Amino acid sequence: MTTVAVVYHSGYGHTERMAQAVAEGAGALLVPIDAEGNLPEGGWESLLAVDAIIMGSPTYMGSVSWQFKKFADASSKPWFSQQWKDKVFAGFTNSATMNGDKLSTLHYLFTLAMQHSGIWVGTGLMPSNAKAAQRNDVNYVGSFSGAMAQSPSDSSPAEMFPGDLETARLFGKRVAETTARFKA
Image (cartoon, rainbow, N blue to C red; front, side, top):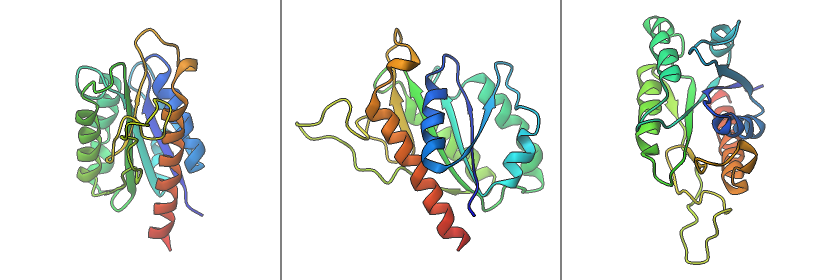
């Protein structure tokens, strides 16, 4: 059986909602990073035990949140002994603007995964980029390297675009399916 964990930080609840959709698609365990940048009790052990780690952070000032960065810096302990080597990795992010430099955040997550000698999985989803495209279409934001969502700054997590959440769910499903192929 393939096991997946979604480790994420959410500042206002939007990234958490996205993490829940990713976890639903992947059948994954949620490992939230708290407001102080710490994992819950047993969080590090959970990440060691799984086959895949999907990382998520809001995009703040063109990168991950400081809370996620604190987690990433603390991951130097498993890095030193290559405990996460050959795990499957993937990443997702959310920001208030359509672009918001989200790709910089995904590059950060990709680089972290590569430092851990991991195997990266992208969305595998075609973008909704035709004239007939609607905001609630799957992969409307148009990312290949990881799932992206956009939440207006004055919206609640309950108001997230259904297409972005479906993109996140399908992305989680793809990561789990890809991980299963590596385990076969």
